[in-house]
Image (cartoon, rainbow, N blue to C red; front, side):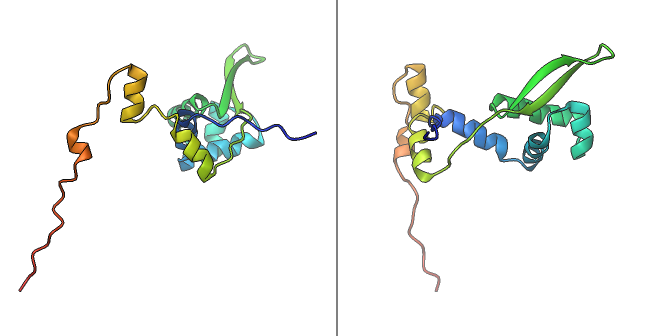
Length: 138
């Protein structure tokens, strides 16, 4: 049976994933959660990070769809939120980026289309006013 290929991510989704993974702290979190699921306090101790900072990073990873959090009731009655890796697979190639860029909405043109507005490109953006002449020193 042939391996099923995942759909290409949109530009916005790919940007969110790359942004989430583009931080050494978040990469360490992903590495730790790849080994086993964990809750914030234990994970904070394991990777040597304060809980508030860890929680911020987990929220960003969760927003990118890379980790999933679930609340569970412990034996002592306390509610604990466990985090684990979400299954994902991205193939990062120049062609994939080319296709993803076409769906970006985080551009001037993309925002204009998303807002239903006309093109908001400034004339100054389209005109290069840089003086490239140099005076020769004597």
